[in-house]
Image (cartoon, rainbow, N blue to C red):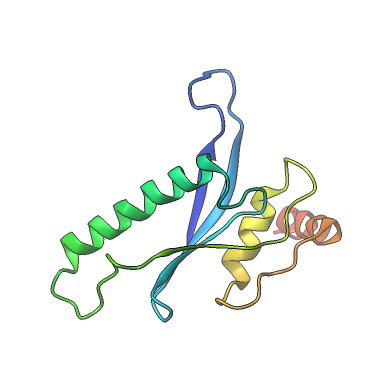
Length: 125
């Protein structure tokens, strides 16, 4: 699993706003999985950001693991349908839940009460 952060206004030096999502390299099912709580495959900013990162992972894998029996250059990208957040501020909590609980089948359910509990947990820890 790879935690991702994408600046939403990279050309504006005053705007430090960004968005968190996750990418999973699923070796068992031979694919990359993108989990985003705000966007889908229809969003060009998401697909270009995710594909750029994934292509770099593939290139690095080929460079350092070219002689292994597992090769990932042919792995497709699946944009996993997730519950969408109800605001523009909770993406990091969704991403952290994906990192903690994603096992390739059921998307962790994250809703407003879950985010409240996560805020308490992370503050306490």
